[in-house]
Image 1: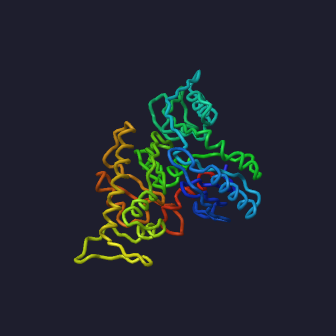
Image 2: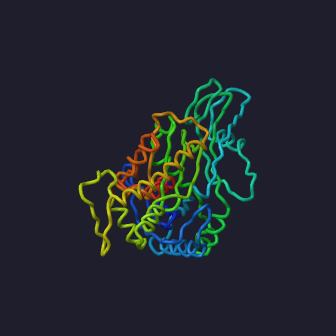
Image 3: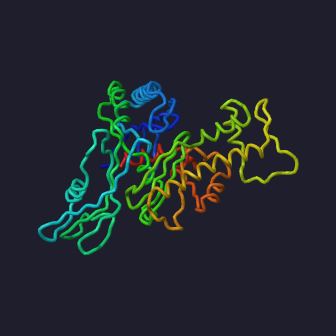
Length: 365
C-alpha cells in the first residue's frame, strides 16, 4: 500500500540525515523537510560515541516533529555494517494444483526462516527467485497455477545493538512505532533496475568511514560485506602526508583530478595559505584507492560466487564521488567496469543522495 508521506532517518557514517517526503510525478519525490545532524560515526560495527549518536537522533526526531508533525510512518535506515544476510531455499506443496496467493508466498517465507539468535532482529525478507512445479522460474508467482512453490529467499537481520540504542531515543521523542529497514536493500531496489538485478548485479556504497559491498539477484541480496574504508581515510592520508588540518586536506582531495597527466614543471595547488604539489597529492589518493580496490577484490572472493565478466561494479555513496578520475582508477585496478549510479531525481547526478532517496522509495511503496 502506497503511503502519502513518510519520515526517514538515514544513519550514515558521519551524519544522521532526517527527511520527510512524499511521491511526486513519475516516481519522483517531494521533500517536505530535510536536515543533517553530524555525529562521530561508527567503525567495525560499533558507534564511536553512543552519546553523540543519541543526540543526533534526538535532534533529528525533534526536527521532523517541528517541521511536519504527523506522517504515515517513521523509518530508520540500517547501514550494512549492522545487518547480516542469510539466503535460504524453501518449498511448500499443495494437495492439488491451485492458484498461488499472497498467503502462500508468506507461508513459503515463514517455512524458510526461524529467528534463532537473541542478538538480532529480522527487518527485511525478499525473493531472489521463485520456481513452480513445472520448472518455471519467475519474479512473482501470485496468480499462477501450481502444485508446488519453491523459492530462493533472502533474509536480512539487524543487530539488536543498533536497534537497542535508537529505539529508546525515538520512543522518548514520541516515535514508538519506528520501523527499521536495510539501506543496502533499499539502494539495490531503487538504483538498479529489475532486469539488471535478474542477471546478477553488484552495488558498492562507499561512505566516509564505512563501505558496503552487496551482490544482488532478483529482489534479494545474496551476499553482503561491510568494511572500514571510505573517503575519510583518503582525507586522513592527505593530512599525514602534508601535515595539514583535516578541513584543508578535504578541500585538497576535492580539487584533485586523477585523470590529469603530470605537466612540465610542478603543478601547484593553493588552498588558503597552503601550497601543495598536485602530483604528490594524486599519488597519495591513488595509493589510498588501491587499498579500496583490495577490499573490493576481497569481497568478491569472500562471496563464493563466480561473477560473470559482464557484471559491472555499480558505485554509489559520497566517499569517492567527489574525486575526479577515481572511478576510472578503481576500474583499472580491479579489472572490472565501474559505473556510478545516483538517484533518479531532477536535482542532478548526486551519488551522495543515494541512501536517502532509496529509503524514501522503499518506504513510500
